[in-house]
Image 1 (cartoon, rainbow, N blue to C red):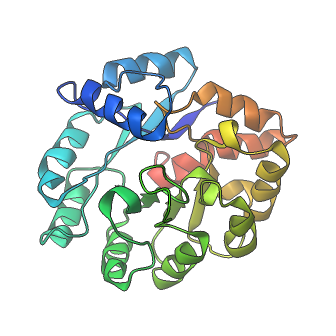
Image 2 (image 1 turned 135 degrees about the vertical axis):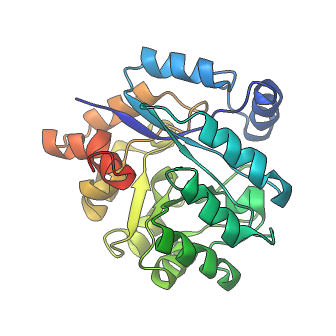
Length: 267
């Protein structure tokens, strides 16, 4: 069986060690790698992962060019890099077009680190432009330790964004909303054709019962294997999903087939 991890973070060698140390201090997690691409590839090979979507985040508008140029530079048969834009940048629409021209596979947006709420109407033109360009969006969703007292992407807010840009494929990380899974079940599961959920951190924090319930309600064809490496081990996530009692076909969809569809790997 093939495995594609749809939520991986790596950084250029110049900033990797410092960036991972800073993030580890914020989230209180012990990283699985030092954040370099080489170290990330090594653990992915160790865990039996065939491909990975590497997600970059522009935490300020001035990072557009550097962030996306680096993402383009790491593209490989087993590496599917996503770019990013900062919503406060004046050149957001042009940069989205450049991301498409660079051959990147989509964009990552992090409402907490980029200081926006997913349902803000100022974001809707960005979402719709991504739909026009065929760029899926991966969002951090739910609680984040950077902003412990305010959730920037709630399931309720995500529902508004999904409805506002139905032509845009949106992937909500952490099974739709970290630590907000009751609301994910109630508000999101099975309601939006353009919605995918990724499994990042589910092995650490979700019960098997709720994880299975969300997969059933959302549909295995709309779930993506993901770890959030370096913050979790993809092998742990695979073991979690294999232990849920899913059919082999459902596992195959989650582990690679859904990712291949979004990434157009079979085209």
